[in-house]
Length: 298
Image 1 (cartoon, one colour):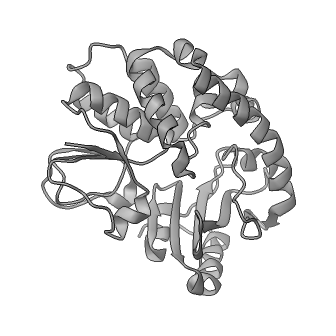
Image 2: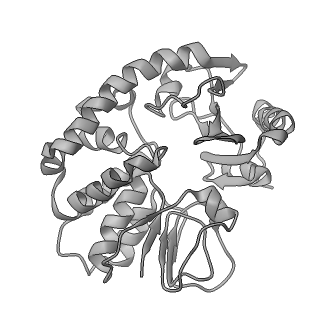
Image 3: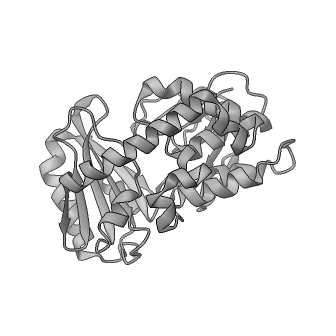
């Protein structure tokens, strides 16, 4: 039995909770959602999948993404909810010896982007927000750190976790990275009516940083689009779309829209990946839908 989840903060917390609730003694398998959608992940009979699309071979499945909903019987739990970790916490609520309620509450808040302007501009003042930003999910070399964080969050409260030398180093690095990221965002983002479009395809290595920062920098925008090449692969283009968390006037179901472009996600945020040959066709179509800003759920 393995835990199969994605390398973001919600995925890390999912793994921590599942380790405590189930008899799992093997390392987490970290997986990108798009790889699950394409069926290229080797899922084993008995695996526990969390925060990712469903696979028939799993024993248990936990998820909360709008576009991952299925119409078949399965073991586990699916709900449209702030986080997958919250669903797992509720499912196993009588099986934990440690009080994870604060961790889950903060994970709900972060994964649903329910943040204040001050939390976005100064994450170093907010322990959970800062910690979440150390899980970038864009470099497989960070896998030992994700595993370390899972182990720490299983055993300790946030104050103790942040005292760990490796965690502290990652947090310090994130603070510096965010300063540079703001400059890079400004230089590579175009405001098209009510849509901010950040294009990082000119970079050999995609800049990383505070994913909420763009909403504070372009308050006129109701939705953001980030375009980049897939990690270490210029054969595929990745597009991330998110409703502004401060100007909440985007009417498009992002996950539903992106399900038509080999992706998916939540109503307010999602991503897709497609071959570079499709970029000239797909990106203008995505932008056109967002510029029209119509409800697409009917």
